[in-house]
Length: 427
Image 1 (spheres, rainbow, N blue to C red):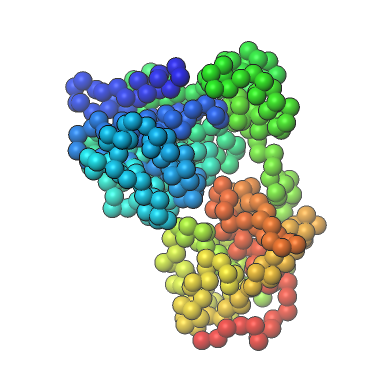
Image 2 (tube, rainbow, N blue to C red):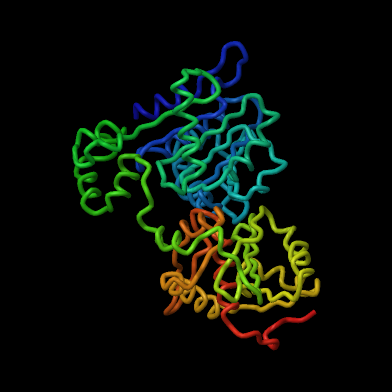
């Protein structure tokens, strides 16, 4: 389509003086279902087949699971059905943890998880950050950029539909791109955006035509009209008109969370601590809850190697009651923590479900108090429910790292209970 051609032609420009790409960073913002997958795949194939030497392409999406599904289920079938693949393709690896597309010339398109250490030590010729609206930090970019440092012809492609106020990383990239265009820099950063103005009439077909580059090609007016009648106003504006919106589907309401939060809230002894790790094992959190119903995020750091030492430091200030989900990612550290002389209260799946619903109910009843912290705010904005049997838990797989909130749930629940020595695991 014309918009794809324009983006590819400009982003692919070569500086005649250096022979390197004129734009090391390419940022593209388009509505959903505009043909983004085809454009991304074209970037990847062009890099693998038409550049000198074996090229390494790294593809990422909002989670490692999403990236694997998009590469193997969306991109690979397109290639395998093409005459291009018959002449130049070698193999599609579908095994878990090894998902990649290998070409006969040795070039490879690989999946990279969203972890901050996942890409270390790997050189990257083309890095792709897809669905960037889901990122609340720079973790994906930080995992790719070091591998590009020794590659003067490397490029970073960042592509997404607009997001919400939680889309911290993407919102910054949009601002960077717009400023680059305004300053007419003509090098370094190429920015493309197809979107409507917030004051444009979302019901007017002229508004759709002005911002939806696939309209009349792969999307027809009837489909847009149906979407308008079935989607919420905010989601229609975000997905179809590519407008940033305020999240209207938060599990924990903004006002409820703000009412519970204050920098003046301080937990009171006796204390209960909790540890939680995100599914990718790239971030971990330590939270304390007081007997007065106040929770506080003590530590939220990248990686997990610091956990035991941090807990030992906290233990020096007195007896420690520590809660860990016995079925969660942090369970792998229970033996090390117990060996360090720290008592652990293991929560079974049923305990976590009961703690989740209690926390939610008490929060809305005004019983939970939160010592303000931006990482807890982000977690509260992103978290959603995951059904389990007749109940539910807070889902770990969310748009942001929600380990601070899940740790808070566990600590708060245990702090409300009387101290029972027999539930502790001793060294």
